[in-house]
Image (tube, rainbow, N blue to C red; front, side, top):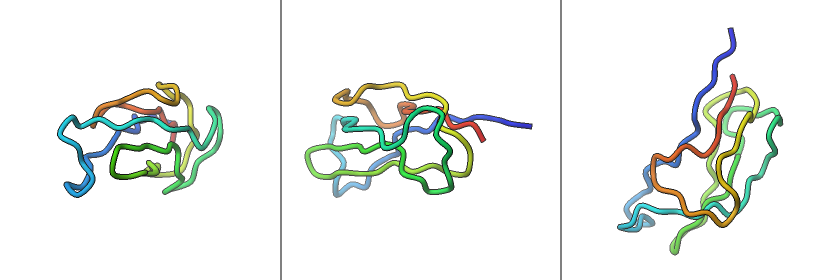
Length: 84
């Protein structure tokens, strides 16, 4: 039975976290409908100190992305829906 989950912006390490708890969506590395494997990078996030690739938790499909590149998002905001 298929299920889905939100892929959220994770809490950042203190060395690269900003007090605003905001990162920018630079670009999605996959398109909606693409298959994903465990640890597939989905989106490139950036703040003043670091560039990060947000990865999936498991196998499935990228069903929905929520933000356009250039959008600022907060820690714990959902970035995408993964169907597993």
